[in-house]
Image: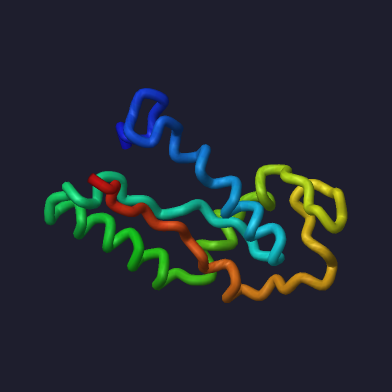
Length: 111
């Protein structure tokens, strides 16, 4: 995660990149769930990869119970353009459970 620091490759903490995803979730009526990250995936050893894979499998096996415990407020209090209220989607937005499965993943930095 050293690359997600002011003096790192990405120049910002990882959380600084999340607002567009959080706002997209709010605009579409989805619940924001924290991402499951594997920092340094291009360098992780077998044990680390297996551990991360097991964490993902555990979450999937406990779906939807785990999600109800991890739901966070919509879009960090960003105002919704059509209502002007913080993190509040229009009343017509869908809130189905299947819509809340989007979890951003990390990508290998370009060299």
